[in-house]
Length: 354
Image (cartoon, rainbow, N blue to C red):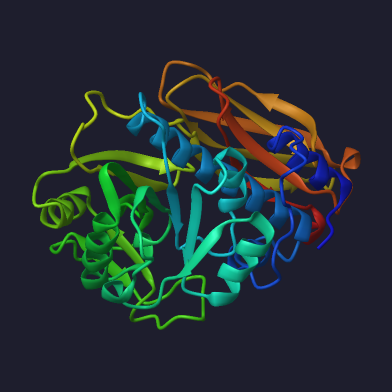
C-alpha cells in the first residue's frame, strides 16, 4: 500500500535510509488496522504509528539482547507472536543471516514474513504444550503476547518458551501493568483478565487483555525456572507503555541490571479551537531525562515546548493559529528525551474539529 511522501520520508529517517528495509504492510495486519481505527481512518497517520512502534519494540529487544550477551555472540533470536512483522522488519536489519526466526498462530502471517523478510517461521498453534519448533534459541522475544493471556495459559506459555531458551540465554516479554487499568478491579490473584482485545480472530476466553502485578510475574517465573533464573522488571519499558520483564536463564547470569532505552510518558489533557482561529493544546510529560515536546505538521516542526525542569512530571502547551495548518495535514505531538527516544503523545488532523 502506498503512503504520502512525508510518510516515506519519516520511514527513511527511522531506518537511516536502509535500502533493505521492507515497508510493505499486509492488508490483514491487525496492528495497522487497530491504529487505523483509532486515528479515524487516516492511513498516513496509522502508518507513522505502526512503523514507529515497530522500531521502538525492536530497539528494546536489541538492547536487552546486548545486555545479556555483552561479551558473547548474541546467536539466534525467535520473535514469538510476531503478527505480520511490525517489529520483525526492524529486527531483520540487525540480525545476522540465518539467526532470526519468527512464530505466529496465523499461517498467513508466517508466510508473509518468510517471503518479505527472509526469515524462517513456525506456526505456534493454540496450546503451549503443542508448540515444537524443533530447536532452541539463544533469545526469545514475546512483545505484547503475555499481555493478552489468562492466568493458566500465561504460566503454560512462559514455561514452554523458557524451555526453548538455550542455557545462558534470555526470554524477553511484556505485560500490561496495573496502572493501565483505570477501572476498579479485584487484584487478589495478581491478575485482572478482560475478554476483549484488538483481534476478532481468536476466542476471547483464550486471548483478551490481561493486567498483572509484578509479584504475579515473579511467582510464575520462579515456578517455571525452578527458582534458578534471574528476573528483571522494567516498568513501562516497552514504548513507554507496557512493562518489560527479562528472564535470564543460567548459567552466567548478568552481574549488572539491564539498561534499556527509557521512553518518555505523557498525554494530552485538553485541546480546543478558540474563536475559530487558534488551536490550543496542553498536557504533561514524564521522562527520566530532560525532554522536549514537539508539535509537527507532517514532518515539519511547528513549535517546540521545553517543559520546566525540577519535577519528573512536567506540563507543556501549544497555542497556534490554525490558518497556517491544512485541515487534512497529519499533525502529531512527540515527546523526546535527550537520549533520543521518542513517543507520540497525540496524532490526527483538524478536519473532525472544523
